[in-house]
Image (cartoon, rainbow, N blue to C red; front, side, top):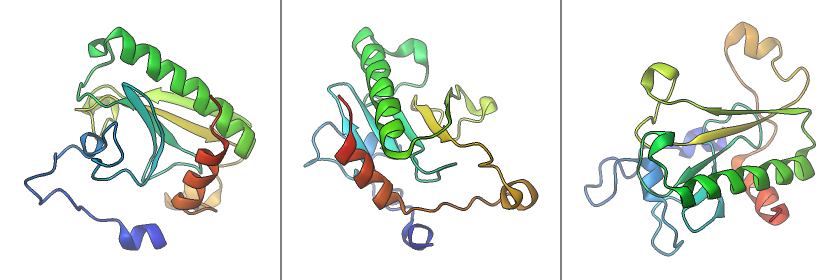
Length: 160
């Protein structure tokens, strides 16, 4: 509830900020406009917690550069997205001990990509039975941890 009450569309009405929420995050924390959920920064790519997570630890890995398709990534971006993905898996395993993961890319709106203009890859930790009664019957997800707490745990434990 703490997140839902403070979540807003800040920046969407500010003409000086990019309309793409992913483009508001830069390599340099001093110039980022919305980096409170960033877990890891690289040279070309970064990892950020999903503001609407399926499960605790649900994050996304993406390039700083605004490109829509996986095929538009250059070699450095492709390599760093892969490296950060491997690091994220190791870190989440260490912090949360999930039973499994979903790793997915939705390319284009028809594939379910709500922010399809900026390529991003989801990493979702999974536990046996994590889709329970509330999720299945009411389409509601309960999360046992605030995003800020999840972010701090992952940052402190990040595996290089």
